[in-house]
Every structure is written in C-alpha cells, then in structure tokens.
Length: 361
Image (cartoon, rainbow, N blue to C red; front, side, top):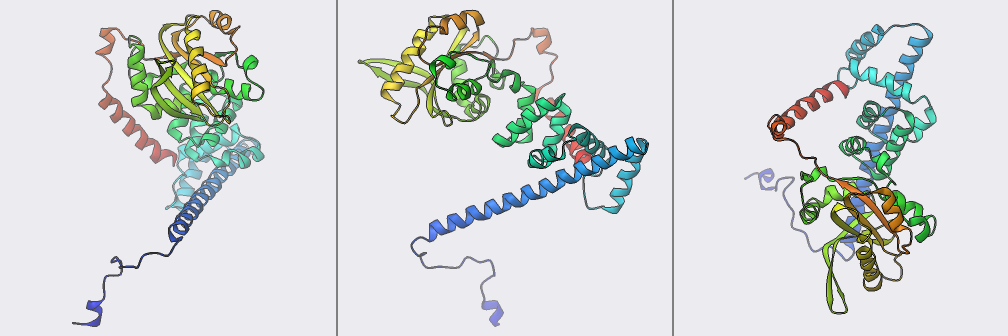
C-alpha cells in the first residue's frame, strides 16, 4: 500500500482535542467579523453598480438633450456594450432606458451617492415604476434603508400606501405623552391597518381575526411596523382575584413601552376605551418595570366615526389610539367563480419575474 493511499482525504473530519477555554467566544466573534466583511463587500459592489448605472444614464441624457441624439442611440449602445462585455449582465435595451429614467429622476449626484447607492438596483426600479414623484420616492427610499426592506417588502409597502396611512390614527398622544415621544408614538401607528394577508372577509369575527393574526405573526409585525415585539395573545391579568384577558400584547423597542391592542369586530363605541384604559392600568401596575414608559393602548375596529373617536379621547389621561383594520371585501358569488386560482396567479408571476430578470439585470 502506498503512502498516499494511507493518507486520509483532504476534507475528512479530523479528531481534535477539546478546545481551550474561550475558544467558542473567539470563534463566534470571528464568524461575526467574516459575515460583516461579506456584507460590506456586497454593499460596496452594489454601490458601485448603482453609481455606474446613474452615470451611464446621465451620459445618455446629456447626449440626447445637448447633442440631439435620438432614441435609436440607446439601441446601438445596448448592442455595442453587450458585445464589449458579453459576461456582464445589465446592458439590455430595457435596462439602459431605466438608467436614463433613473438619472432623470435623480439629478442630485450628492443624494444618489449618499442615500440611493445604499439600495440595490431592483429597489431603484420599484421606486421609479410605482411612485409618481421625488418626495414620495425619497420617503420610501429612506424607510427601505432604515428597515432593510427587501424589494418585495418595499413593493408591498408602496402598494398598501404606507405613507398615506402612517401617523393617521386618532390619538391623544400630544396631551398624554412628552415630546418627542408623542411624535414617535403617533408615527408608529397607522390608519387603516391592512390585514388582507389573513385571507379573511369582512364577515370574520374578532376572535377569528385575532387567532389568524397570531398564526401569521410575521406578516402582522410587518404591518404594525418597525419596533414592535410580540409578547402574547389572550394575556391573563389577575386583578383582585378576577381574571381578565388582553387580546394582544406587544412591546415597542423604540418607545420602550408595552402596547395593548384590542380588537373590536364592529364600529367604534366610546365605551370601548373604558375597557382599554383598565388594561393599561393593569399592565402599568403589574407588568411594566421602572425603566419602561407608560403603556400605550391601540383600539382596532372595523369602522369609526373620526369625530366621535376624537371626542371619546378628549378626556382620557392615558395614551391611546384608535384605528380601523381592513380585511378582504366580500365578493358576489358570480365574481368569485371568475377569479383566477392561486396556482394560476403564481404561474403568471413566475413567468413575469423570469422575464423581468432577463431584461432588467
């Protein structure tokens, strides 16, 4: 038997003695540093790509406006760049047109370098395709960076009109919370909340909605927004030997306080706030510690009269908000039968996504 045949394979596991004290912590630290380096490398590549596309778009704009070159030049450029760089994606006719649109939408080089270069190219396309003007694009771009949204999440937030809903709940925060906490608390709430991801129609009862929200808590947290951490459902409170149950309890990491959410299956009534206020008092006395801020209450109902809600909150000393939630609207039977199936929709989306990848990369 040769010496080489007696050697263990290069990748075979090697029996090692137990690691020295502190090795596990050191290894964990090294792994963290390696992951961070990988992320920085990816971000650096993305940044250079976005800036390259922006500069190409600026060049196309300049030559078309200053030298009178027509639209046909983009077709020629796409062909020539593909021949010059056959291994590099991104020089399709469609993508070059996006580069031109990107440069036209964002003429401020400093903003592109400081802010937009933090977002991948597909995020840029979503901002261009789905939003009408620079102010709304700036807002969604900032939120995507702040919360590290994927492109799909960004598109979902745009399509559900997050900007228009943010900070729209009826609250008494200006009179019950100190500034700037009151402003942050107000911006943390929306109106209405969109629960269509549950697949429930308006006929669903509040307990059914509550159970479904917990089953799909990831989507629920995404709809609630950044900072919310789920604590529990039907949280038991023992007050003087009597038992009470809170629908949903959260903790807000930025506000540093508990958030009690109560669901009502019908229209808002002023007496609902009495029950919510009782729960806030119980949480403040039994659950929160000295470092937590006062507990906030959010009452979610299917509908509300805004003026009635404002009146009802007028004399309340505890921080509360009132907002609506929206489920899927019921469709007449004749329309339900004509709708495409989930499988059909998925097939269509898969085909469209593949086509977009080929053209826009």
